[in-house]
Length: 272
Image (cartoon, rainbow, N blue to C red; front, side, top):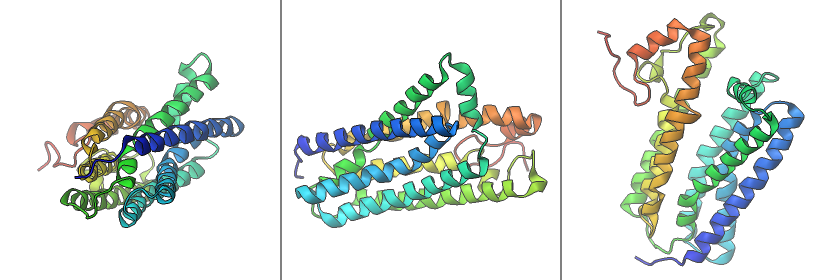
């Protein structure tokens, strides 16, 4: 297997970090004008396709990589990132001018709220850029043909994308019904998992890792699904969402917790 030079990989990753740090600073300035930090979620969603497009353009003009593979990688990231970005943008619009409760809580916790938000935005920038290594590896690959790892990664990605889309649609449909106000969504995929959207989001990163195994140094992307799993379970995903759900729905959500898997879709406990 041809081993690529490290210089183009380093160049692409430096471009990723520089672009995201600058972008999140601009988003922070916008959030101050809007007085709503939730806009950072929208930037997070679209940020991945921005980096993938930069990688694609750089690789194309520098003669690195096999163009059909680059197009496949760009298409995969675009499908997922644009869907996520549009979904988050619509959620932000629907909530406007109210701010996501997570960021309101953050403001109250920090002595200097704006400085705290800037640091939080830039931490997201660093995390987002670090997660784009699979894209850079694929873009500079000299491997001529698609491997079983790439085909498996594509299949896993499509399952994850469909699953996440269905889960988000089911939850949005539930929320739009005024009769469900204050209730807990337990229909469709939400019957088997309290956070099926986060589970399939994690599967996207598992798919990128599997895809990367086709390339030299691809094993080094193992941190992507591990890091996202930690964030989804312990930081911005399950933990924060459930704390807010318990505050807003009380015992109804506590009962849901007792019977339903937190992450991996599975059969309910104590239900016959």
